[in-house]
Length: 237
Length: 301
Image: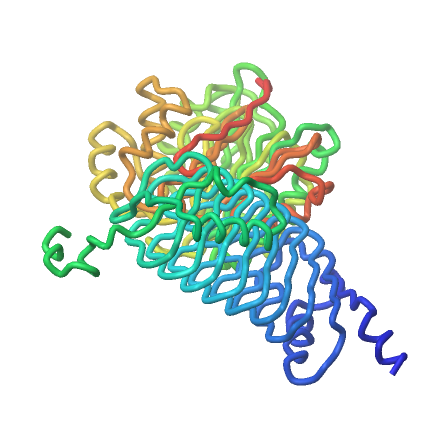
């Protein structure tokens, strides 16, 4: 038992300069079928695409360096931390678990995500949370244009500013922004911050480990006037 | 798809190994553009009053000595050309316009890839790795360079359809994306006297920049004009005698990343291509904002 515990406590280090990406991901995927190391450290990612993508096990993966597209995509249960920047589609279609990035992320972060928490400590580029469906996203910096486009459910918390057309064609997702919003997209409006919203922002900031005052945030959501809500407005487009 | 890379040396160490770094970056972008590859290298300025031409011949038995003899007869002394695969670089004792006109008139079978005092353009169909080997990219020293790997969407896979496109003396353009109004724009630019050699959409953007610059716009103004006059998706990198500039369209679907250290400034479609540079792990890296011109320059000529 003691030996097994030691094995499980050991950190499994994978060097992508020596190991193929396919081998790394296969070993991580195997964890959903049979137990193995719970702590992983990936070094030398060098911008590779699809690092730690498709995980389905309660493990922790630390990545030292910048990653390419779709890192931690479709993540389930796992915690993936990127100690660097991430390119297009970090945590896209995440189901559950936690994905955290120390640096900046490129476009479409958390796209179509259905659950779990995505934390970006730097800035996120355009289309952050596009078509999000239940994921919670907390961004320590700012987000680019068309963020939360067609966002369905879940929360996007932005501690900095938001670019053009925030929340265009939004459904039921909640958007909280502390700074300036360049412009709101079609059918997205500012709404009152009630106690339940302050509590929600407090919880999400707490979960993300970001120190900010919930009272400084403003809430945005759907006016529910788009043709998807009101068929009478179909002709307006 | 397509991949773009750019490298601007801030130190002599990078200048002497510019080609080696450029080749490594280009090979990283192979999966984004396996059809063709090309580079524009800014190096060894021609002496005052002289100019430099990069010529391409489709004939792999081309007798470049005969071209040199012709240039000598026309303009006086002319050094031995530097030949790399299907391309040869000539330093001619005349200004670039005269030299280019002579080639077009006397050797219409040759294609002028670039003209100016500093620029050299090499491009060819095939995988980036094969291109880098065939053109001995590792040998190049220089101040800055742009490169492109092509996955063709709008026109044929040929040497002429590869990037970079020269847009005027010492100017070049590489492009990731596709333009949708290039046919109509090509026609209106032709009426302004801009010449096109292919049906390629990027050549139209290059021609547009050449036209705007000819009409007195600064490079920054010409690039900002693209935001109004070009319809489509693009990340552009433009090379000039003393630097390069980067512009993304306002929608910014096409990727770009910029990075800077004390030693270099680099741009690429993806981080993978920058990760191969010395000190990349500690570089300051960021994504260029949509619709914003970024430019780096240094005094050279």
